[in-house]
Image (tube, rainbow, N blue to C red; front, side, top):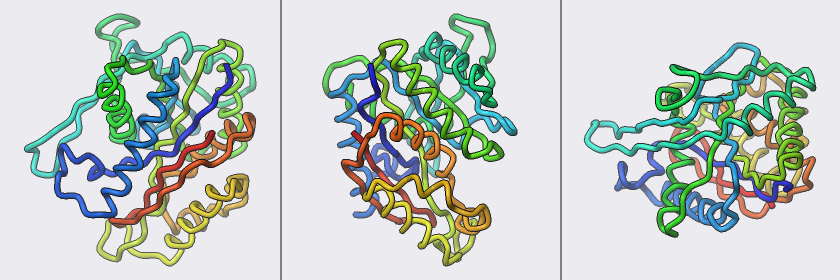
Length: 278
């Protein structure tokens, strides 16, 4: 089955009211957008969720495809008084199929497992870029008394040629067709991180410009423009989103998906977008 739905989901810690109950209005708007997108995914009820995170394995010049039996992770608030835990079962056969398709196309991929070859001890640690979107999705499934879908976690590195990332998205789309599986792809992404002089990356004018481009291109279905951004501009704005969004571009281009919703806020030193494409 073709891919009918993809999303961009942020991974700011304060999005989760269970561990950060006193979020401001801008965080609340983003959180509500995450809930809405998660309910849409629940209604589609895909066979597999493929999620790309910038904060998991950082394999130089390669895309990691996690092929463990399951993934799990815990996220704590600042004072370690509250936490959430997410556990997901991986679709090993689908992940392996993506790996084989990517290898056929000479893309720089590696299949990654940890611990045991299979079974209980074949597990991989989730990062916050994986935990936060999947937590919202699992909450939507829980509210509707449904079991969440299997996942495939992919981990693009920043050294990969951009055209390879787009081609990897096309490969995911091809495998979904060949296996006749309903797949939802999620680009876990925060945008420019240089909005605040007091933040860890300081302030740069390019941050506002970058986030402006992202919101405009998403809403106007012009994400092809991503391929024209300069590396120097990206280095100044300091997003963690470009690489996952290039994979997304390969999928939405191959399936002719269009933007449905786009919510942008910048409540911290980094900007965040919740967007969906159908």
